[in-house]
Image 1 (cartoon, rainbow over the protein chains, first blue to last red):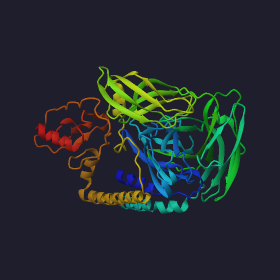
Image 2 (image 1 turned 135 degrees about the vertical axis):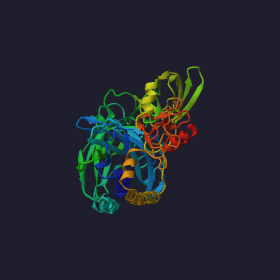
Image 3 (image 1 turned 60 degrees about the horizontal axis):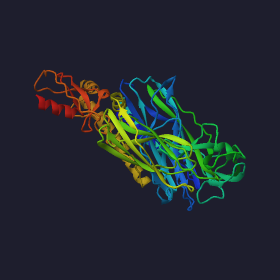
Image 4 (image 1 turned 90 degrees about the horizontal axis):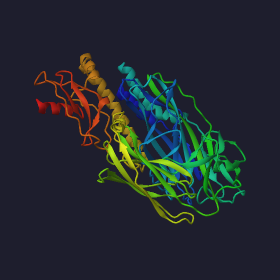
Length: 164
Length: 429
């Protein structure tokens, strides 16, 4: 049964879709909201699950130099007043979609623990990240040994920005 | 039951195409009109002056939608870099920006120009101050509740931001302060956290290093770093992942921050040598809670160069999992119910489990504990190991070990997995 759950997670990751874009700078999350993370049967030991969120960054004007960032914040997962630990971001990857003249150079060190104040979870350094890219960030959440049963909710705010 | 499992597996394989066909959504872009080089706005304005600009909001998705527009303050993110406080009412540079529209509705393939004004307050101090113009897609989709015992539903908000930097002329000041150093982290990743404040008025990108010394002066490790943008009048608790875990004790951190020249202020170096302590409780908190399910991705970011390669790998993994699920079902059919009951409770050495992978980077806060060895019941025992993954300990060799107890012969020892436990048991007999 555990193997099958893993299979569901992997195959659901294949289900993400995206739309085309061609602005100077645009950002959109292509993973459909809400994401339901595969549940677990509580066993009295800590258990963790991962899920991926794919977003698309288009930085398509050839003269662009500033680079770009993806930032994230998240509320604590809560269910009827009970909480489990903050979400972590454990990885970030890019894949070229189209017109990639300079791949992004990412300087972020993982893992990062998300809080309600935003922090950068992926970036393209100055003079990099020109083109249209899919950015996939892996999130990890932990059901602690003493977690209460229930459906926990968290809101993740993902932001693409270009600036100083 | 098995038929249901197989049907479920086939259904989830069909999900990607179903989802692709069903998903229609707007994709909003934001462009800094008239400022193509940087892609964001940079204004120079004295106190009391105003500047006008415009953003072009576009929808390149395949559905109509409405986007909210508002201004936000910027600050320095925990790992440095400009981040925007989009959940708070703007109090500083974000409050200087007034947009002509608060929302825009767009059909697919259309765009709209929205003007804005930046008005610098009278009496504003010299410096480089940053705000952001935010476009937030307002679509929210309600999700089904899970029937499983514990699950998490993640709602995603989607924002696009273009920065607005306003330079208020005057004397550039570049000063930094280094505060206390503490240790932190969780789930097997130990961090050194240094409080750093930009007390000047310029945007800078410092570099530096933290050298960790024992209380007797012996060098433990050096952690170099390069920061992203550090905004003026902001402070952060800057985390650095330790290459090697620090055991309990007293330490000194030699922190060196190299600040480049900025806006006429000269380059300079700031140093400090705060002391810090790590308690046994600190170490336990980091290394005895849930471990990551996979080895950490390393100190730096990983990248993929080809989306097709990634999808091929994912598809291959999915196929392998389907085959594994089928093989598992066949195996269960052959073994019968007695074996099934035993497998759900105990771990056999012939089929070692995949315990939570230990973190690769940190090693030994403490020496590995001595294995306890009760009286063996039988010399030639077929071990059925019970493993307590909640009481793992990180050894001096960087390997996690967990209490193993043999249900058959009562032997108890610390081992990395059941194969290790069986090997240790054979040596001791």
